[in-house]
Image (cartoon, rainbow over the protein chains, first blue to last red):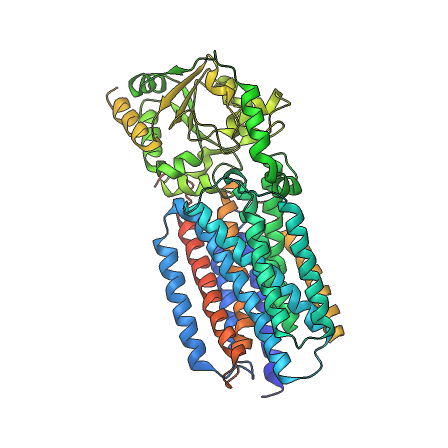
Length: 468
Length: 95
């Protein structure tokens, strides 16, 4: 039995890893996604049970208490969270995963220096790496959470010499690591390294603005996987290495999709955001002159335009999420369809604060997903669309991205709502978007502005359209 | 021990390639569920935390491990449940 058990555990890990791969594969198609998630969770259950059988795991009472506490908190969070708050939720969970991986490394370090004299160099290296990735994931995710919750503003926060400061910190970390490799019995140096990696996590997310959040959340998702992998190296445990690598890869893929959707490189998103406040302000003053006029309409006129249109494309943005207007939007679409209007939704890949943010909200409001169109599919159709209804979106519909070489968002693929016969923009005020760039769409002849918070405005539109 | 490191690197590299191949094409509709689902998988750190927390002799390592178990369990349970809640809403046709 005793010789059999370790092999059985390893084989269980193999099964779990295979289930993770199958689960992720199925998560890639709407029809099988729910199934895939269930398969992956079975994989996790197998991995956990197998680990509990491990001969070194004896502390059952406390472990079961810990699992019970964690399960209760996780379940309550999962059922209570509003769909609009999903980016925060994912951010927070990323952070917990990162922290758990870092704690594994810290615990192992402590066990090593209290029990044996000579700590192998490879152990120290993997422990230090694990603490670095886990620490950055932890505090970076917490800060992203705090920003998304609105506890502190979403604008990029910068200070002078930020980059040199970061590089110095990284240098200090490397020096401390080298010291630790030479002499591992230095708990204070190790504590210092933990501190530095946590500070680096904060500094990494601090200068990134609201509109770039989808990139950061994806990257932190990848990091949480890499942190688990690093912990796997510390424990020489293939289960952790494999699962962590899978998550690391999926996070990188999402990060790349997000960067492409903004026509920017990852380095540009992470580091040029340092200067975005300056470039943006110069861009906005250059782009707009005082004599431009906007055309404002009220909800009656808006309802008229929508009700008599043949085809309407709804373009949701972060403003719809903030106002929790997704149900009202769906109701408006229902009323329009009752009048025979063809309604579609156009989703920009980086609309909102997380990859796929708008899709989740509209799904919550019972909008069938085949009505949601990607940028590449809907853009050729705008010529034939009567009304494009922009709800709380800004930069992703700014035509300046196509032609204004001085604009900070030049080259970013946009939803070409300006080519529709008419455009109605629902917006709280004339403030610029998160990039700080003025939107010339608002000043075009075919554009009508409807000022107000998305939810009451759309509810008024709904009641006006009902009269038809 | 260095041998373990090398095997680990082999496993890591191959698993990364599998990850890239498996997830390669993902429709935007599923970006969020993929993220929260894969996020739950990164809660695999729970396995590491269990191994670290398993020692019956109370010491700092055990305590750190137990905290890790709590955090990783939140990650796993919260991640899988919230993903399921989201995916339940994705419908092809009008209900």
